[in-house]
Amino acid sequence: MKTITIGKTLISVLSGDITAWTGDIIVNAANSGLLGGNGVDGAIHRIGGPEIMEQCKEIRKLQGGCPPGHAVITGAGNLDAKHVIHTVGPIWEGGGRGEAQTLADCYRSSLQLANEVGARSIAFPNISTGIYGYPKSPACDVALKAVSEFLREDRQDNRLEQIDFVCFESDNTDLYVQWLEHYV
Ligand code: ADP
Image 1: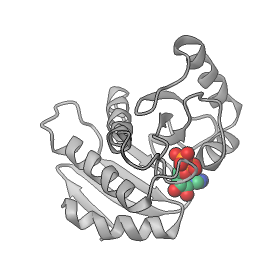
Image 2: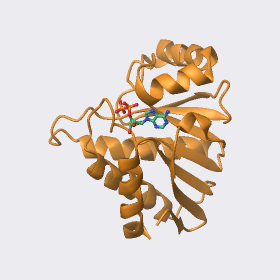
Image 3: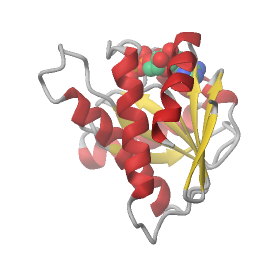
Image 4: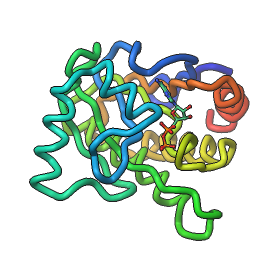
């Protein structure tokens, strides 16, 4: 299954590069320093251009970075989106340090922030499953659970009609397609 609908929101699993996605919000798997890095973070800053980093630096000045589980928002520079939401996933340390909760918080805080700016569409990468080492199958489960719980709350403020999980690696695509039907 590649799509499900919860309420008025279509959730889809896509394969590819999130920097090529078109819509309102691209989510970045950032690090606490907000100064860029490798993986999807590097790609977003490379393709998005320097404007995004300038805004990240402003946020650093104001609040000294972004703790794991939280999210901040900037413009999207040259990306074909209105904003980038930078969220900081947990570094996997074996699972006993609240990693699942922190990862769920990333999805939740990103969805909240997206709604605050009236977004209708959002694309998520597979947060923490690269350099941060979160095992892919449990990360997929946490992501789908967090998003579906958010949508099932009786929220008056939800404007999101489209939530895309953009999987860069084919094993992640397979996992999301397998898990999606459990959240119908
Ligand atoms: P983290 O530090 O949160 O683990 P990474 O960027 O290392 O962040 O990896 C997070 C996920 O993003 C991984 O599944 C990786 O395959 C994926 N990824 C890397 N580049 C891209 C991209 N251009 N578009 C979408 N996903 C990407």
